[in-house]
Length: 307
Image 1 (tube, rainbow, N blue to C red):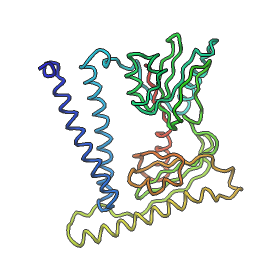
Image 2: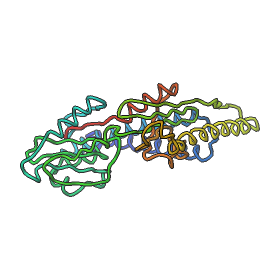
Image 3: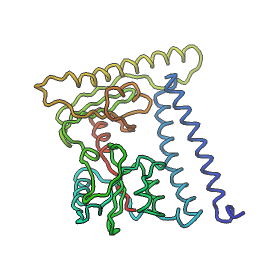
Image 4: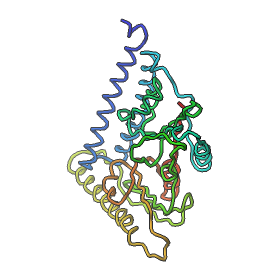
């Protein structure tokens, strides 16, 4: 009765419906990855729909939390995304904060909602709900309450928490440092760049002719799908060879690669994961050079939440 009056029952039912649809789509995507028998376009649409549902579920869950009590109704004071010079400026401001007290500043990496360190929970109290919502995140706080934020880094460090006289914000968690190989792998597109910081100093890319969905059934469909699977396999072999070649680069081509990041379609990342230090899903599309630019920009973006 109370749930109906407060509008919570409808929200709960809608969340359950969306969760079920999300599970269905995830099972479908996993089955498609194993069989490799559905069209590339169908897999991409399913993955995009899963991402859309995750955002909608998160939004509804936040509304439900606000309806169920004062603790859950607490909101972030501000949420923004930063990259490039804007991110460098934000990190510089946090690093400029210093404390005369050797235990005046708290830094912690919270990998997920179920792994909040006791030091974080004790300090944030009822705002710990926001920390859980922000995870995975690097959480910052000072003992005066002037600084209170959660940063979602592109590269996740090992979990830690500590009180110190300065915040721990390693540049390598947030921005490309040293010499970085960054690749985008899709079923029909491959792009690989070598970067020194934000500057790309080398590029390799290609596209492959992979047939789209075949709507007819029967033997012709099976033959079509086998042909398409073969095209994808050949494309991924070329992509894998390019990534493997990073270890055998001519010394005259420049210093060795410090880190390899590979992003792309969820369904193909498993094929190249062994050649990457970090992998992530990306929906960047287009010609290889343009798609790589978009994927690189999106990956090296940090979400900053003021708690």
